[in-house]
Image (tube, rainbow, N blue to C red; front, side):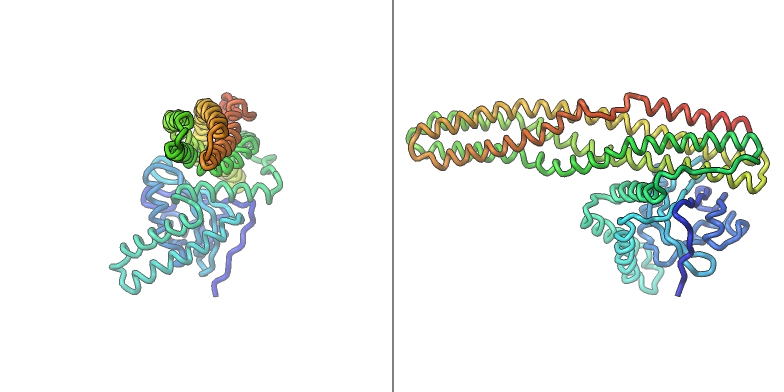
Length: 444
């Protein structure tokens, strides 16, 4: 039986590869846990550590995203040199002439879900392929189909949605386990240039940690907006259906002309509100996606910067020359800079879309105010006429629906005055920290 290779939650793996996946650089954690010597890894294809339990379809999705120039994350089971195994949450990003990957120890509840899904998907692949390697392509396609089915059952409409949620959850779980512990480096005896880089990196890690706490409310906001999305989808159709039923009921009354007129006005107003309610739904979906993307980008930036700080410590221990250190750190600096810019851009986009969401919501609220007034008039007219119990019940139901809508939309309107708006402060702080890192690396 294979044995799991241990490593601690604060440890991070790092490696870079060329475009074909051949390893160019690794850190001490990767070397120790994989069981290979550094010389055995450099120049070898990264699949030297691929575990047979890993679904090939997951790797196909992983590489499709990565080759499209986007960061991608996945749970990965790796095999060590001695036949053991170890699980990581890996995030990979494109860099000039290759890719960079950082891995951390997975501990969130989504890890168990991923392992369960992987077992199912891998079984599908093996059932299709059997012992015939010529069937590998259709087996991967069958596995990918099963992967998306299982993710949909779990509430994720795409692998990207699951990836963002899982990576953010793992970084949050890691932060919680470390109880806000700030990474420390023993740089007292380091070459002054490396010491300056390390200190600048730690400053950036602290800044990104503060930013992560600022974004903590985004997750709760995203979940709240998701819960409202179903309500928004049904709102327009529900009001229109009630008004049509009221018109039909009024037509069956001998003295229902006034009621019919009110019901017709109600239908016209619901038709006028429908496009803006649909726009509200679109903006809501956009906001949820952006909130998820922002949390993912912030988590990635924090882990990548922390990795760079730890790598500085390793360079000191390895007695690497300043020139060689500068070459390796220059690449990592640009990774950190791009991650930081991506976080700031996402935050600005979130503010923009939430402002739009608040504006559309206020417009819909104005329509609902008119609908509420018509509903009251409908109940008054129903009380004046005879045999109008059915119509009265319909108007009361419309009233309940509109009252519920008002409560829901009030939360949207409050987004315009919400606390925690960035207003460019995070971008300025982030760029200042990254500039300090760049200057320190350039000084090497």
